[in-house]
Image (cartoon, rainbow, N blue to C red):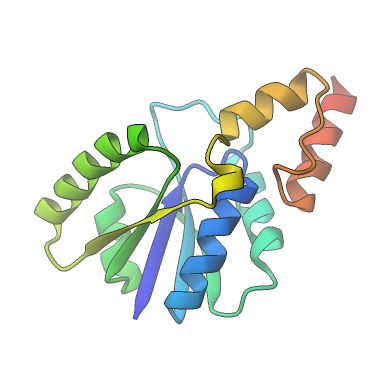
Length: 159
C-alpha cells in the first residue's frame, strides 16, 4: 500500500525525518511531498525543499519525493496513495490535523489519514524554530539532517 506524507518542509527537520523513517517501515511505498501553500511564504524555494528532502531520504528504500501543486487529496489520488500520514508533536497539533483529515475524507473517501506521534526528543521542534535559531547563530545541528544544516549555514554566511 502506498502512503503519502505531506508537509511544507521549510526546511525538513529531524522530527519530520523521524516520522518519514517510521512510516517507511510500515508502508512499502511512501511519497514525501512538499506542499505549495499560498498562505505561507517559505524561506526555501520549492526546488530547494525538494532537493533537501531527496538528500535527507536517499537512504530509505521505497521513499520518493514530490510536490503538491493543489489539493492534497487530488495529489493522493493521482499518486495512487491510499493513506495520508500526518505527524503530530503535541495535542495542540491534533485539533488542526483532525479538521484537515475530516475535510480530506469528505473530499476523497478512498483516502485514510494516519497520525504518528514524533519521537519525544523532537516533540518541540518546528521548521520555524529551526530557522529562527539558525538565523540568530544558534547550533541546530541536532535538529536537522546534514543537507539542511549545510544550506542553513550557507544562507547565514551570505547574510
